[in-house]
Amino acid sequence: MRSQTTDRVNPGKYTRDVWFTDKDENQALSLRYTGEVLFRKESPFQRVSVLDTHAYGKMLTIDNMVMCTEKDEYHYHEMISHPAMLAYGNAKNVLVIGGGDGGTIREILKHESVEKVTMVEIDGVVIEACKEHLPSISCEFDNPKLNLIVGDGIEFVKNAKAGEYDLIMVDGSDPVGPAEGLFTDEFYTNCKNALSENGLLVAQGESPMFNGKVFVELNQCLSNIFGQEKVNTLLFYIPTYPTGMWSFQIASKGNINPINADESKIEAFVNKNELNYYNQEIHKAAFAMPNFVKKLLKKE
Ligand code: SAM
Image (tube, rainbow, N blue to C red; front, side, top):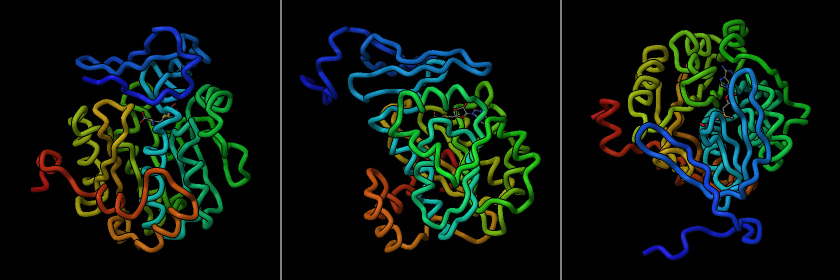
């Protein structure tokens, strides 16, 4: 029997028994919240909301799907950024597609070598909501190294200069609506072209447990474009995404193998920045695949 399932962030605020549910065809995640919707706007692309939940603090949702919460966002944002940034070593010019909450640019800007981050987010309403209600995530929008573009990332990479970026992070939503084109051969071919000689691409890869088909298709799409041995899958744990098991795919244009990042550099970076999820043991473990995932990816 479970008597106390969550830490109470601020018990006084959460007296009402109202629940938000992120509902898929066959399963759902429910979180109790204050009953008050802090932000809700219909943008030309999607419905953007912010709620204050009992267990995970404030939460951004898009079209009723959890995008991030104050309590576990760092799992995602540290893991999309640091394994690839530290494997690359001295990244100067980074491109982020999506990422409107600001968490990915916050992590990238912790790397001192970075001179410029270009972020292309299709929906200004996401940025507005997060600046207003999620300041711990959106805290780097005024950083002078940031070149913020509100526009379509798919169009942006079509016209990007060849060899321009050391790293590209695709921090997009699930493959529906404006993010559908973030899961195509054409998009990733254009990303590869925009990467520097030794560049790395990191793509939000869905869940092998929840969305195995898209997980495999993205891995195959990147393998066709970059070469199978140049694509690595990274798994991490995040409680507010369906099944709690999520992935990124890291594709390498040159010869950098992200698995082999320098352990002492990782530890120094982690300690200096007091990270909450990522460390050198996690770096190693994240590339280990359970057998069912190896089978899905035909790696055994
Ligand atoms: N952590 C989230 C997840 O995996 O569920 C993803 C982060 S969320 C902030 C993804 C962002 O990608 C959204 O703000 C959305 O507006 C943006 N996005 C979707 N399609 C896009 C596109 N074609 N170009 C640029 N941004 C896009």
